[in-house]
Amino acid sequence: MIAVVGSLNLDLVAPVPHHPVPGETVLGGDIGQHPGGKGANQAVAAARLGGDVAFVGRVGDDDAGEFLVGAARERGVDTTCITRTPGVPTGRALIAVAPTGENSIIVSPGANSRLGAADCEAAGDRLRAARVTLLQQEVPDEANHAAARLSGGLVVYNPAPAVPGAVPPAHVDLLVPNRTELAALTGTREPETLDEVAEAARLLKGAGAVVVTLGADGVLLLEGGARLHVPAHRVRPADTTGAGDTFCGALAVALAEGEPLERAVRWASAAAALSTTRAGAQSSAPDRDEVEALLAGSGVG
Image (cartoon, helix red, strand yellow):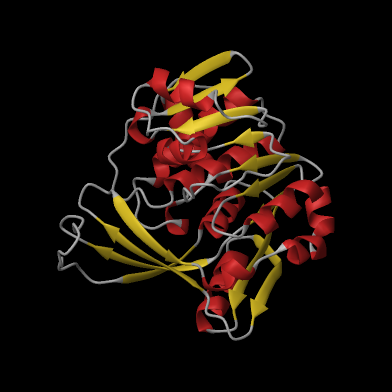
């Protein structure tokens, strides 16, 4: 089983001709409404890929919360440990998507900010039974630290969104940042080259391994003294929203199934690439057959 502790947001998505600069108003297209939140995105991606997934989180006692819980349940996620929070709105994300597929996002956490150690204690049976526990930074550190402590399996921590000064849990087996998040964790400038990424990643202490997602530049895996670069699959992106979350969900599935880390990273990279070819976050997550087909076509076993 995979336990995901994290956020649920209602995504409000608008296409824009370009991302606005400070002081600029941009006329966008028709707004779309989709289930999102980094935690929920990762849980749904894992479930679509065949994972047995339990979710720990909070929504408001409102229509948006009901919609998000229902969407996760319909996609195969165990929502028993999602708590409704009276008097607090469900989290929202405001997303602008440019023609290139690149996005900019504003998150209003709402009920996600109320998730705490008590929620993880209440879900202790799920966390102790999980082969992989997947965490992100859209919920308070208190919840992540408790979940990591209670986890009976591997702890995978995606420090997203980047929060300068955030402290990863003590019990992390695999850290999965992107360039921006890596810079926030290390207090360095954002690395550009693979050598700079590797140098920054080696400043991190505590995690057994680090996997840095690099968008079109692929993925860099550092484990012990070894370094492996996995190039990105060549696809035509339509919307990069949720690609990192799909990567994390797929990585959790492969690790829960006992795959070695290198194979898990390659598999997750293929899943993330496929997700960029479709719009939305949860709706863009591929199924298992699609991932295997892409890997077979690229000659990767």
